[in-house]
Image (cartoon, rainbow, N blue to C red; front, side, top):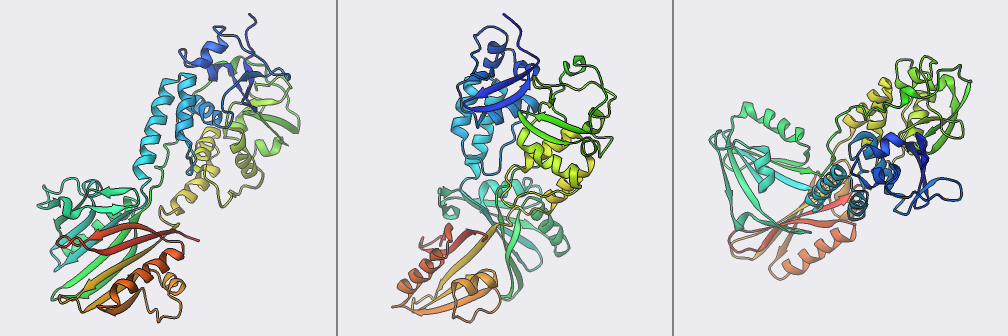
Length: 436
């Protein structure tokens, strides 16, 4: 059987990809290695491309994993079940493991943003309330600090996905240590949504923090090197207009754009000082993510990074920029990354219910950004970040239900309900809405 060419074109379920034989056969016990090492027959489509009857869209992630040995998925990726099926078909064990981890990680954060409440009183102690796992993460050595964590059914709370095990941590903390601890909370991905200061015999402060899941920044590193590239055709004088095939996507650009940054991988590759691989049509070939190269090339053309507002593949673009070793692009991406706030798209309403001991009067307080209060409760006097309603015993239930419904009508969803530890009546709600 004739050995397949070093640069191969695959038709996967109607999606065409171009890669190298080295990339797709590097895992010797995989299905792709079986196919292209002659252990299985390789059918071809009418254009002569090797054909695999599998999901063509998801093969992009399989191929990128083979190129970089890392699984990097878009922020809004949802097709974990099908990707798991594809990984099993191709019999790439390390990919199967990474898909499983990504799926579990996605499920663990799918219940929505996490809420952390902090209370600081008398300049001596800090009380943290929220999910038990979150508290243990924030203060892992609490007992060494002289603190404690209380847990049990009374601290559990409801979310849209079910009941979450809650807790309350108490930590001795001096006033001069408070700022450092708040910074620690922010460094863990939380953002202050509400804060207040009040006098109850002592000077007390309260904060509400929210953390929405955001993928960890990827460690920048080079993808696996292809030892066969050095054996490809001899270096040559390059034309001023160049057709370049990146993973099956053909771009036409100028030699000046590709060599704008001489110390980059592209600058060296198209300097004429080393051989450059070509595909069967004579296009210069790079075995990387084709659609992502559009943003790389646009940066080379203008030295500016412009991404769509709905762009979801930031981490994959970071991988590509690092592979091409374009330092200004890497720096631009880092600036974008550092400017991104994990919960920038999150709007929160907190609602508390207080009844007097005789049940004659109910106070309902709504906490939110001023613009949100004005939107939801138009016609009411919204001063600052809170709005207070007072109801008598007969009005309390119906009026509270009407206010809850009004919040929901404006696109908010109930994120968390907190119950009174003694009578189990719900006395606090948190609502969440993606920022419009």
